[in-house]
Length: 377
Image 1 (tube, rainbow, N blue to C red):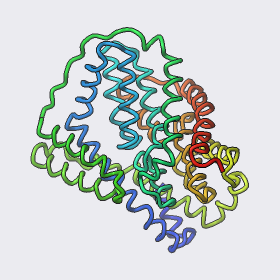
Image 2: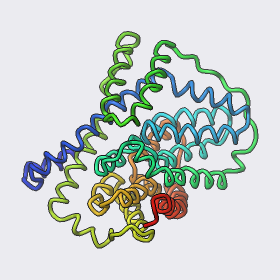
Image 3: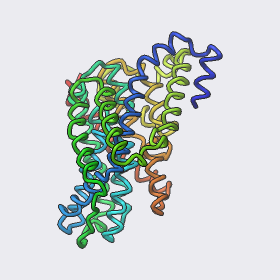
Image 4: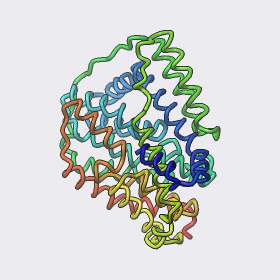
């Protein structure tokens, strides 16, 4: 995809002025993605996620249902503050292994992480790359973004959780026995990682450009690992493939915009801020995400969302909607890779049907919550 974008630029299909504007807008966002990937990889290597699941297992006090509620909370919080990809890649394996070791059917735990990785990514700008793009467009502070999106984000957590309980309520009954505690191999690194997140998370919503605290956190953890465990530092930690894919998508969609994409999509996207108008835009975003992918869907429709309320509706569509096709969200593909490495198989047909049920119920409710919570134009 990066080659396609570079080809568009070299051939003159993407004007240099448009490319310069695109680079100025997206370079800080991509820098943030790189820094946060390094932070979460090193935090995981220090064992923090395993320690958290040990604590969750103890707090569950043998109740499968209570344990599952803690898994939902961990998935939602990790997604909101550390991004949906963190939940898909790092939370999923520890949660699934926890279920397997406790002799609990792992499927409801696995679906919890992937559904909330997508649907809980409406809370904060850092939760999803599309949110960061929208925030830069709206010129909102992180707290302003949260005030706009908290109600639909809450719907995005509650509705999938209720559907999961209805579908798996028999599996979520019963008891589990005491689970082994994983000792950290280096408690200094564990404390450094926990302290870094303790400082970083409020910094990400402070209004400071998010790339700055993320880069400082990444630099600190890299320095700690250079001293304590240099073998953990490897080039493969950097998200090369997603980064090249994302940069290429930015360039290709910008090329299409330079040749009339926004005008072509305007009739389908509609206009206005009534509930039907917002639902129409959200549904178009969800459909486009499941046909292609949520990021190009957002980029293609962004010009049609000319106000914070309409951008909020578009984010509902492209964040909450990608639960049907496996390629609709990169997080879903990463989640599936993790499940394959754990020998847990998921049938895509069943995944699509269940995801469609979530989208059909949650999408209009989330749009309604957005509309009711922001003035009912």
